[in-house]
Image (cartoon, rainbow, N blue to C red):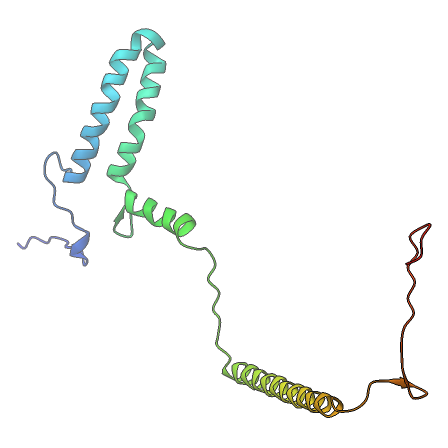
Amino acid sequence: MAISVTVPKDLSAIKTKVAFNLTKRQLVCFSAAALVGLPFYIFTKDLLGTEVSALFMVVLMLPFFFLAMYERDGFPAEKIVYFMVRQKFLVPGIRPYRTENLYSRLEEREKLRKELAYLESREESYKSRKQAVHKGKKALKGTAPHTVRGKKKKENITYSTGKHNI
């Protein structure tokens, strides 16, 4: 007569039990829940009544039970909470996939090159016009001043300040 025992395929899912068929994690969390909940109940049962005090005790102990028992995809509850906080608040939300269009970069570079060439040509033409004007002023320095019928042009300016003309 043979005895058959079923063995799970995934042995990593098996946890080491320490006492009362509980893992170390569960023992620590249940002990913490007892350390928080029982003193609260003992000190508040006279003030609030036993029923209300018991309800508040259960509410205080529930997070510890949650941390002890909840596990998803091999991760304990605090890791899952950390992942959720990191996803929602710490890391930027939407990261769209953007391709790099090399053709548009080449077009932009060509456009900038043409604009630079245009500006350089304008600067050269401005310099050449400035030099021509400067040469023209040098040529005009030796000529006579403006004349009216062979005489120097004089301006008559009168300023009036009320009673006196200057």
